[in-house]
Length: 215
Image (cartoon, rainbow, N blue to C red; front, side, top):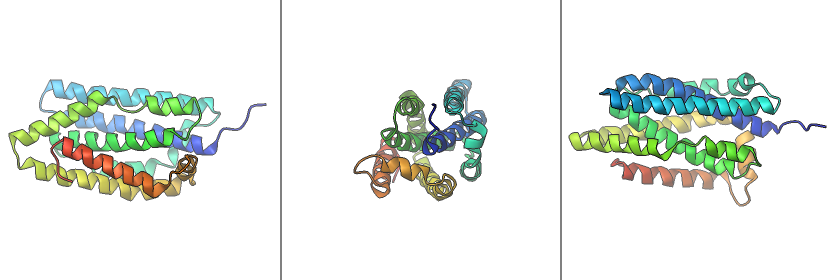
């Protein structure tokens, strides 16, 4: 007898799948802000990785006997609201969004993955972003600041806005996921939500400094 899929895991995979799908769409659009073809190609490569990850996650949802469309649908409003409110207006803002948003997502998923059984744990770890993309984005941010030091303040404010918008929409995600994320976090012994968010904040601060931005 085949056991029913864990609803919390299906909800998590739905969230990740829609995040990947939307990231592909937005990165492909943001690539048009690139100042040259080399940089445009780099962001398009990042977008291609997102759609590949989406396919992996959607395939796993299907294998669990659930519908990817249904698993993703409840998160559409919150995730789309984040991207709609954080549209970059130039290349430095585009790479800062990729740098900040991808890293926070990866940190969160890495924490969640530790509470999952295989093969879902490995799948979540496999869709984390390649470090070379973060290095590319950080290098572009530092180059923009080197060309015009005044950019540092603007991009620092932009990064803080990105985090603020992400946290604002997190509440809507939590309301939509029927407590799935809290359930998965609780499965890790000795871990609570406040402690998790403190670690995410500390890691974000370190990345801001590494890219030449102010916290």
